[in-house]
Amino acid sequence: MQAITILHSLIRWAVLLFGVWTLINALTGVFTKRNYSAGDNKSNLFFMISCDIQLLIGLILYFSNGWFDRLKHLGENMKDPTSRFFTMEHMSMMLLAWILVHIGRSSVKRATTDAAKHKRMLIFFGLAIVLILAAIPWPGREAIGRPLLKWFN
Image 1 (cartoon, rainbow, N blue to C red):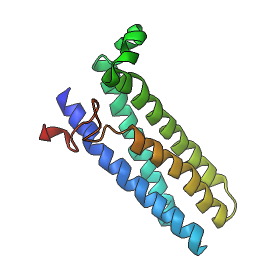
Image 2: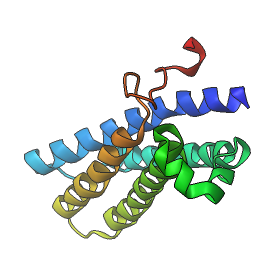
Image 3: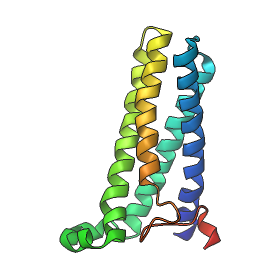
């Protein structure tokens, strides 16, 4: 299970890299009014794929590490910041971000103008990145902080 946790920690960087790439493309597209390009399409496709892989690995961890079983004692978990974060907050925010990425990808593909595509990229993927950044257990966060790379424990 340790290997899966390390993989989950590493793929976080791919999610963030592709998410930032997508946001930069969206921002430059909105402000410079450039055409929607194949690079824009690739950035948000890779962002979505990395989120899908991360979700799959996260679900494996969620169900195999006992976080799901802790939902039976929800009252006790809500009192403990670590349990609350990993049983409820992390999972909920990441699922919502994953949904936003998928809705955003579909919405961008359906948009008819380049300006609309860039604007939808900025809105949906921007909100998803904010949620992802808020849901990561960054080092220094009291009770829930984790190392930047898992194997540096």
